[in-house]
Image 1: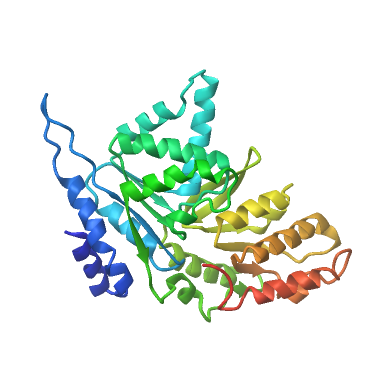
Image 2: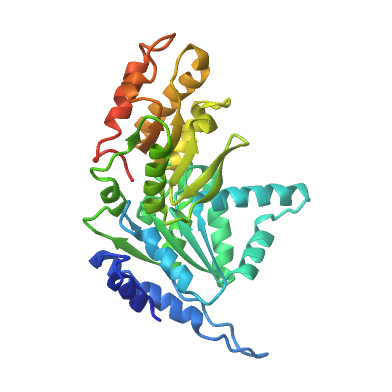
Length: 351
């Protein structure tokens, strides 16, 4: 079945709604699928066929880029790996650290060789470059992967020319942007419909009091947003790992004490806000003197999510204005409660 036929079958079954912007991407995905499906002729003097161009699919959030990529990867009959770009970079950093400890001078080359031996296609979700270390590693690694014939398909919210925009020593990163343009077809996905936002538009996103009903409603929303595909994910912050037990495509689901019951601070919450577009926080308790430290962290967390325009879904012991009624910090919490209320609006965030 071709990618076009697969997409049309999902539309016919009601699983998807036909979208012209999504349909326009399908020929590119089918082009890659066909090229990878072509048997490689073996022989002593046969030249290895050139790998097909990959795809750089960019556009606004919620347009279905990740959904199309998942459908594409599932349809392939060749070894492929689909990863969130942020998680991939964490794995690469860890592998490079281990290689350097073994005394390898060029730690990236053997790593690229191993990746190329394992897969013919790498599919990245949400490519973004935020620091010079990642920029230099990615440039070198992708150069070697392309040399080895690995095909790359990636989604991003940014056009390639805006990757690592205004970053330190960005001029050293510009050759990689050109390499992306040479090796990948650049396709902008323009659609007026934000499907993730539409799923939540007008929907309740703050549930109280705590209990079975609130849990069930959160379960329903999470299943709809992730299609049951969430998995654990770690964010590395200054050498530490911030563990998210449930993560999928820039969305995470955690308990209140996972984020506010341990010694986390602004740097952790900033890394969280930079990684996520949507966060589900469950089981927010009544706050007061008995859990003052947790309450302080919660205030910092909400401020950071608010500034980062992260969509918020919560289950809590009481409505925002009644969560923190007495004790030190209760007066200042009024701003936090106001921000939580604002973050419930259908227009809020970058989902």
